[in-house]
Length: 291
Image 1 (cartoon, rainbow, N blue to C red):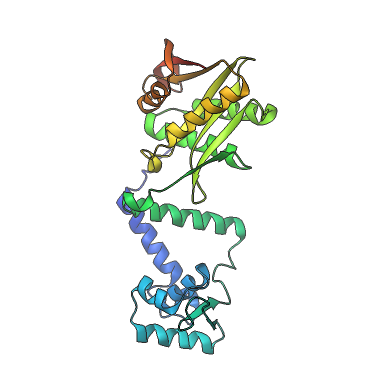
Image 2 (cartoon, rainbow, N blue to C red):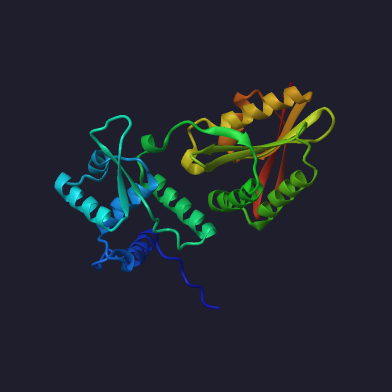
């Protein structure tokens, strides 16, 4: 069987650019086989995505000449695509809103994936200060447990070379949590910002007096924001409130960032043992925190 090498990152980006410019019709006279140019379509998109924006805001956001934008909006009004209204804050400026959406022809699940992918592209190319900001730690919702399994499998394979046995173990842990979850004694928390999952952790019951911290994860793009520490702190706070006397966890010696978080939270190394798992020779560690 012939093995086909994966394209380099540069080749992959160039391929995507060629596909996307063909898809949106940048090189043609009309975008998406429409009578609108790329600039007109961009103005239309901004009106749909941000209802109530003024012409002045559009000029500043898109860097357009005032006369050029005025002509575009005039064409839109003649075609019945936008309506003009008076702003309650400033009656000198008109508010614009789009009647239709270019994305209506895309099925909802694919549309969600498309928007998520666009967000990832923006985050990847943005300066660090542009993506930093407050995050929310919340209880898990439908779909989050599947995300936990997927992200653990993908990230640990990429960063540590763990094989599918690790993903299978994560799936078993998550499945057991989902089947017998007692919200008074067990929780799964998700760190989220702007609708995007950035991290996760589980606290499960090991015995009447001992809880177990499991599956701590922080996305690479969100590391350094304090998410890992916040998730561990949430586990400790909840465990105390639930009446546990100890939290224990099992990790690997090579997961240095996670080990630092456990030390900072007051956990102490209780034991270590070499083992061969997930396609690797590892040193497993047990950490405990007395509450």
